[in-house]
Length: 295
Ligand SMILES: [Zn+2]
Image (tube, rainbow, N blue to C red; front, side, top):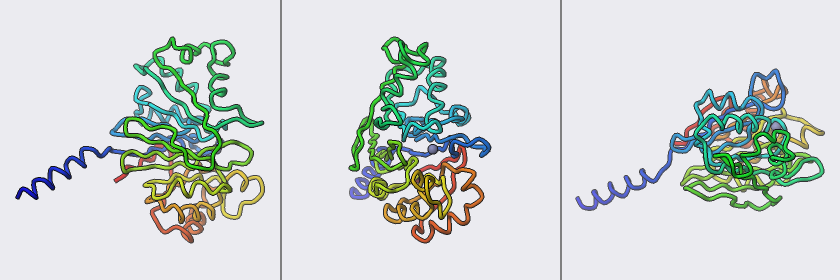
């Protein structure tokens, strides 16, 4: 009897300690107009709160309000890279914050600079700095005056997994991925024993995502190019073959295909067939507002 009671008590403590975690796709498209999708953006919901944003491309702010996400609940924004289709709605989010009770620090992480991109800290400065920012009228979000402060951090290039954030039961790990000439990062978010991994845009050349995504609950992979792509397209993005090979090695419980573009839309059967050669697990194509709760 005592044994049963202890077991019951122990399992209820474990249940209490477990967080509810869900992925919501805000934007399942790429940079094109005509795909009827917002550009790249995702929310990680933790215990019913919109805690982490991954990318915030064009159209994401409308989806953000459609799914009743709250700016005040956000702790962190993770930018996989600084292309327009992953960052364009950030100014809209910051302006909207003025009309909410959002306060404290909102942390923004993203990649380092190269000849084609500023680093993430400079990127945010160029948007909002009170002297030189293009939207300098929002400079009080950087200089300490506004209730909500943006704190930007640049993640150095690394082919080793690096924990960049560990707070309130959320652990975020980053690693560099190959996206043509653009510095880019994949992220894994662990909340207790649940995790979601985001490839961002990448072509697989660094072979870093396999390790980052190992055993993850959900892997969000960007399906921007069809089977057989070559040249620039294959320098920038994973073909279905590469997605399948990475999924085989990392073995996510669920594979979500997103960043769908006009060149991959309508080719889902072919894409699925190719990925299936390597990965036999659960696979789904994302749409805007798709919601996946981790069981
Ligand atoms: Zn993109």
